[in-house]
Amino acid sequence: MSGLPSGLRRFNDADFGAAEEALLACCGSRRWALRLAVHRPYPTVSSLLAAASEASYDLSHTDLTEALADESSMPQPLLGMRAPGSQAAHTALQAAHAAYEARFGHVFVVSLDDCPAEEMLDQVLVSLRARLGNDPDEERSTAAEELRRIALHRLEHLVASHASAAS
Image 1 (tube, one colour):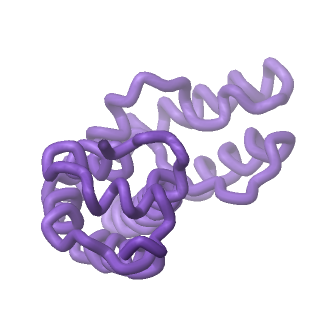
Image 2 (cartoon, one colour):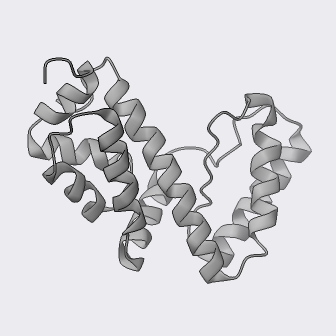
């Protein structure tokens, strides 16, 4: 296993509690984090990401609620609020976030991988407005898929990191 990327090696070698906490920073479902921590060591980053994706698809209603609640409790500005844009666009974005949370009971999640910073505010606003029209079951499914994509991106960053993220 010495040929492993250093971030994956550290993740595989971390004590169980540290690995679970690092995973919870990727997705706030305890069952998801436990499942991935228990199945270490992973021979490749790809195998870890495949296991994480599979675990994401297996989230129960309760697991997804827990993960979305964790996203809601993160101390960060609303998605898109740091992106460049006019005051009017930021005000519209803030109102759309509030409408979304009132309708669905959790923070809006969307994966913005590869979205240029100058397009982020518009992308979030367009996504928010479109998804406000979803029925609750459809939106729950969409939010679960977006959360899966976000978790995989965070996990990939975690094991690619040169910092000691999971040790």
